[in-house]
Image 1 (tube, rainbow, N blue to C red):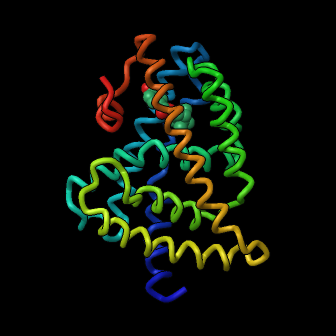
Image 2: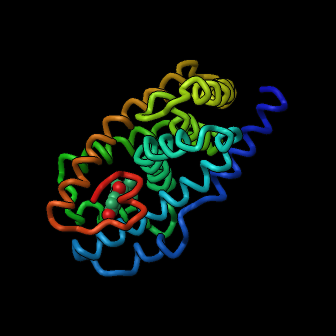
Image 3: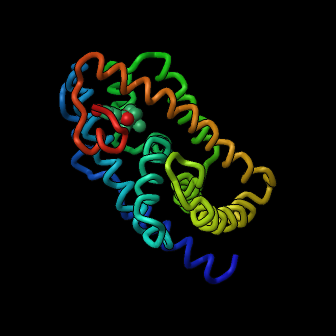
Length: 228
Ligand SMILES: CC1(C)[C@H]2CC[C@]1(C)[C@H](OC(=O)c1ccc(O)cc1)C2
């Protein structure tokens, strides 16, 4: 890993760690009661703050703000669900001491999300947990997801591809250094991105079923996912 690649990795990892979900949202998970309605409201607050965190993090990706403005929006809209699942996978697998994860899992299971979506979601969290990613890998993998050139409506795909390749190069070298006993580790990481894409289809259905039951989303979530 070259000096500038180390600098790039540090910028991205620091930004990833700096933009965490506000403690008040995490704390609420433990306090409020357990009705399906309450749970939905908490998840709404959590998803909204995760999207805010995503936007702030993305602005710190070197080169992102030099992309065409409309392409920046297209990348954010195209990757929001995947980035959110990656981030929440890390929350789940950190096994926060205060038992947040059990409570969060409980609330998710009782918030009107259908079982057919719950199962793949928790399978994904398990498969991410088994990778034992270091925080640099988590930050870089999320960046690779955001910088996916073939999102809908991206005009200058080459510009996005160039940025993504830079990050992939650092991630590949980091995987070799962090997991020398597992030469195919980098390929396994990228395989998770494919799993993420199937999850985002389930996510669209989840939103639709909530809307059918007249649940309200926040303006930010409506904007990022073109609902309502
Ligand atoms: C952990 C998760 C990634 C999983 C369950 C909660 C999440 C934050 C996310 O919730 C939403 O997308 C969502 C969208 C709209 C809404 O009003 C509430 C939640 C799906």
